[in-house]
Image (cartoon, chains in turn green, red):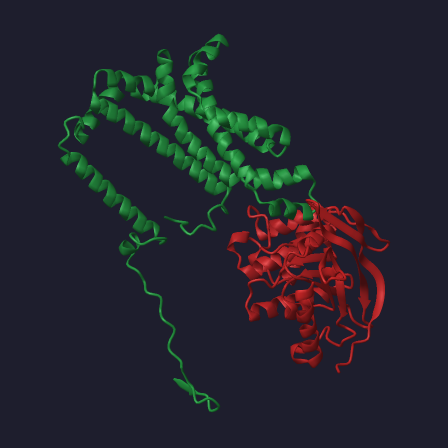
Length: 286
Length: 276
């Protein structure tokens, strides 16, 4: 349809608005900043797993055990070498250490609203460059035993990272968020509760997820330091001593599965308690 | 010439006396004096809408924060109410440019907590919040989180939340910023409606949009610096000019933008802007 302006003689041609092209979901997977459906995402994961397993099976490397060997080794470890007990022992240490870490770290991070505690949080954060080995002797002198020593070493190792992340979350809250709460007649401690504690709960869960992963990374090292206490870390080191690659992979994959399940559970709790958390994200599903 | 509407001046609602502010050795505000009075129109309920105009970097936001009780001036005082009392945080509501809300609370939750902060119990806060949501046309969004609202809805919720707490006064920072013409008209209508809902409802709007300010306000304040004998700006801004749009016949009228007086005032403000 064309409209001619009699004054100027110009003609405006109304063209239909261009329709947004629907991109094939599998092509979209290779384009930047695309949101895809959960179904497509799952299909991609399935394809990637199939490819990874196929590469694994076809691998010519002698040191890489075949999936069948790993499954067989897993059965042996589970049925005859007490993998389940060792796994439970390690899991309990990780969970206990994580809970203690969460309490200490959140408290210290929230306390950074007071200038007095900022230097303390910064000092704790700087300790992430220290090695855990140097703390074993003091823990022994303190009279701590077995799992206690492992737990507190883990707490130290995770707290320094947790405080670093969470104190940064608190420090990055914009001034306008504080001012907004103040305009609603909130006293400063109420502002801290509403803006700093409740307002960053979703991010605290995210930091917790990262630190739970760090916990599983540390557990094998910590159990290696305290070998007498057992755990999957000791089991892993024992298998490594005899170069039993199939058993090493079996333990590693078992740790990975348990850690991923733990990560999933924390993610579910986060979604239940903080349903607002992902509403502004471009990629809400996959 | 448009006929001005009949009105009477009532009690003083908000007043700033000799407000001075220095930051980092630089004078930002100098002897700012202003006063907002209750405007009474026989047979009508009429609130007040004042627009604060001024070039960027002139101290509008600083003055805004002082009027809201968020910052203290170096000297001088802001008073609210009758009899006048020094302003306290929360007495003057603030809607910042990006309409801040508690992201972790639903729309209803945002309003209820504001009500509780004002001293109302939970049940009464909920009842009042439901009424305000209804009045603002937001009832269907009560259970949504702020991230699920459009910009316009978010702005209305932010205003509603402040009125749960501050009752009468609302400072709005750049409410027309980034909006298209239709959206600006809707915001003007919304402010006009809310202002007309209660005698003491008072909006103070900080904006760069001269035309929108003139459409919505009954009074314009222009913030700027004085000039010395060499025509150099003297540090520290204060109210340079005040326009009573009621007397000019430009307040409370629809379609006023085509009036010669409207165009004349707008032209005048544009001309003095570079000298502020």
